[in-house]
Amino acid sequence: MKIIVAGAGEQGTFISQAFTAQGHDVVLVDRDAEALDAAGETLDVMTMEGDCTYRTTLEAAGASGAAGYLGLTGDDATNLVSAALARTLGAKTTVARVAAPGFYPKRRGVEFGLLGVHATLCEARLASAELENLAMGRHASMMESLGLGALRVGLFPVGKDSPVKGVYPHELHLPEGIRVSGVARVGFLRPPADAPRLEPDDVLMLAGDATQMPAAWPRLCREGDLSRAVVLGGGDVGSQLAEDLAQAFARVELVEMRRDRAEKLAEDLPNIRVLVGDGRHVRFLEDLNLDSAAAVFSTTRDDETNLLIALMARKLGARQTFSLLRRSGYRDAFEHLPIDGFVGTYEVMARCCASIVAKAGIRGTLKIKDTGHRLIEWHWPDGGFEGEDKLRGDDLPIPSGGFVVAHLSDSRCVEEAHSAIHAGDTHLFAIPERDIGRFERAMRRWAKGGSR
Image (cartoon, rainbow, N blue to C red; front, side, top):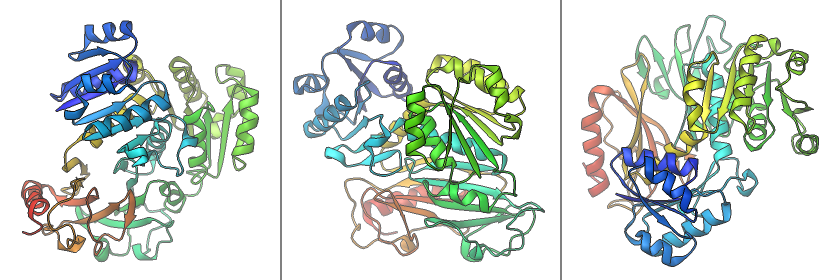
């Protein structure tokens, strides 16, 4: 497939490399001839100098026959306008990176259909969600964002002192949009309708609206597990992260070095304690008493500063330390140093772009530990399919032992069992590993003909 990438900066070149590694033909467009020359020396791509907001540039790049157009320049307006123009010229799928979280009417990291653009991506919100998922690693055996960030799925082991021990799953008081999707016991994964009273060593599976999932965490963790979180760096990622963490942690503190920015954050985030300070100074970190923090996040704009803060926080006794990584060149350093985890913004964006451009069918699989099942993310064709007007969730050819975990329609979670299926919907299934090949073949027949 042909993919056009606008923007030869670090993010654009990283994503171009990811697509070429998958065997796609990539055309990299930028107005900066030097940036294109540098990219051409290391990447197996076609480069084109030009303004991607010009029709003539996109026509010359082959937008009319492109499977995907990705607007990844450093300018939000350029990305949005060029993606909209590429769509009118015939590009099958278009994506625009728009950085400012305030641009989006909802708290999710993806907006669909704006100006005809298939997907608009907020890097800050996507990255902050991944940092939140990492933070739950101590309490959940899995926490993943799926469905282009609209859905989260978590696996929560039930311990002897778990607050949900002895409770029937249907009796759990969960936030709106979050539901029990299954229970694993002795390696056997049961659908929610068959879920028994929860006992130690069970694993509870939750799924639902990604923005509501953090509010469910306190109901599943022991008292004190989510006592305090500290975020250092009040930029777009840090402020979004702090706002989301406030749903889960009893106390959230956000540290920003610039006083004017800190004052604005204090106004916008009344439930969060905003402090002015420089996390690079050991004395300041000592005064934060990080040994009482359940999780510390370094989210400044500078990778070296983030790594330094994470290492010092760990040395000062923080139970978990996580960092934001903005440049791919620092990945090796982050991997080999004693921090609990990091999120690369460029990797998050690359995964989203690849998922959006992918054809209908299975967009990803994820092993459900110790169950013999996999989560299967299935995307229905965007252009419609035969039988779409009558196909419902409970008609699908799901093998014995498999079941629907979630159904996304128009990026919203709906009641999956009886809901009508429309073009562009996404289903998440739990399928026994032995049946995945047979299930995929059956589903493709359904997508083509609407019947077994």
